[in-house]
Figure 1 (cartoon, rainbow, N blue to C red):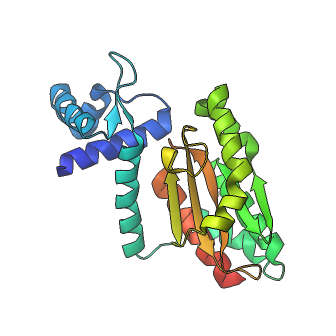
Figure 2 (tube, one colour):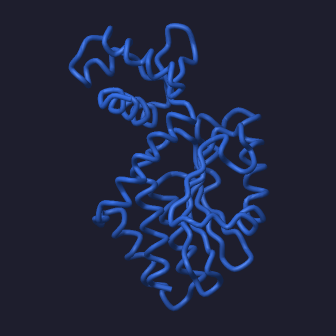
Length: 235
């Protein structure tokens, strides 16, 4: 993949996250300062690679799970290598959670609630043998989950998430499961982003968010990674 194709794929993913609609060549041509024909040619190549798809005739393009995976892998490498600067959102989580440092359960719930507010996703954490969920309304108000089939798949994923986490024990500091990569609800169109951390309850405690595949991965991955590391330090 060329550098320009990487940038176009990233732009499609980021624009799609904002507008919840296919991204057209005219929009991208203005962004990159090239002709629409040039963008269409590059889009055709990205489509051949399986990274984007045209959902309707004469429509723009949306990312596929494979496109998201390529993008997320690039982000993960960049975030892991670079020192994580604390932005306003990360500081807000720290300020809120630090007031509960003497109570692990309250600290974890507070961290989840902060992630819900900042990402507009469903927040998830394991507290002992329980799965704490917050922000269900955020999840099912997303356009993708207005349809019955997707909503049912997401509900199945949530119903089975706690036993799956206990069994699978994802072992990376940050774990991202995109669309069909999810253990259950493979056609839900959802992404699960979770961080493993050590807590008084377990060496394999988890915190993260569940939302549509269409989301701001750079921001959400950074916040989830930081929150897991912060909880481990505080607790």
